[in-house]
Amino acid sequence: MTVSRPSVAAPVAEDSDGSVGPDAPSAAERRSALRRGGAVLVLVLLAALVPLLGPDLALHESGEAAAPGIDLVTLLRTVMFGALCVLAGHTAGGWLTRRVPDAPAPRPVNWSGPAAFLGAVAAVGLALIVANGNIPPDTLAELRPGRLWQTTDGRLALLEVNAFIAAGFCAQSRRPGSAALPLAVVAAAEALRAHPSIGPEEDPLVGSALTFVHLSSAALWAGGLLWVLRTMRLWRAWPRPAAALLGLYARVAAVLFAAITASGICSTLRKLPLDSVFDTAYGRVLFAKLLLVVVIAVLAVLARARLKRGGDPWSAMVPARAEVVVLGAVVAVSALLTAVPAPIWWDRPLWG
Image 1 (tube, rainbow, N blue to C red):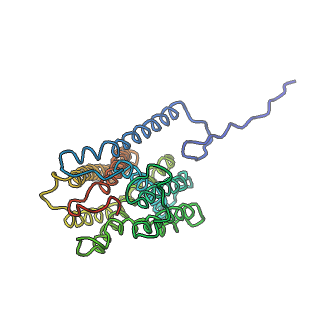
Image 2: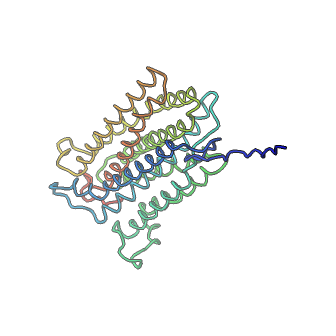
Image 3: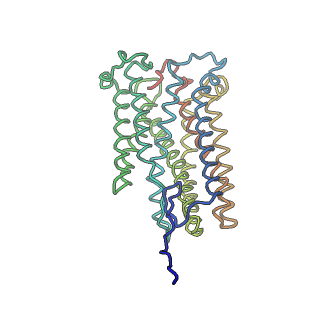
């Protein structure tokens, strides 16, 4: 008499993005995940070089004095801008995926919670610097958070901290799209901080409006692309919806790129004399950012051309992934740009 063994269901594995699949990952998939993790670690280390080495390179032989704590401020602003991009991408990504016909169910793991936490921590660090007279405190005794209410810069710093916290709660709620409002508050506070009402600028509200458009469009562009690529990796078995998602993002990104370009050109003409591009730290950092944006534009055109030519979303992902990497570098360079001395307002404080 033969006794049959009870069948045992194969274990269900969860991939690196949190989606559940019927089979355990193969050795090739595990090696691919390790390579991606190593690449992310290398990129994080390279991004850290911008706040560590960028200020000295930008200020070299420019005749300008480095503001106190410029390295720390650049690092904190890099983290804050990166968090803003991730949160904006999560909000815009949900809007994009809902407009894809027959969109598959898998969605990327929600990074909005950690992003909001890091953004709030970075905003708190910047706020403490503002409270200490735009100088990083050396000891706990120098912390004066109560002074934040006494200045416009301090109130804007507090507003950013609370906006990041609110955005994190909204992104985790049943209506993640509601995070758009606190994220807009962060962008508006940054725009007002960059163009104070006191100074030689004739109309600071125009400069604030340009900065708001520039920062908001850049955050949606970078964060949206990150969301799209993470979603497409989960949609490997659904090439048609994946191609539709990338095509939809491409059309939105074209509008965002036009807004970034127009607002960036107008802001540059208002703040930077053309004969000071290579003689000032601001001009050098701005030129480096311009070169990176040109590289991004080439990669974006290449990805869209591949998608349009063959309709294969996987061939377009190669330049799109490189585009995300360069966008990360632009975030770090943009943070440095806000920390170096402005070419016209020589006596302007570091953070405001």
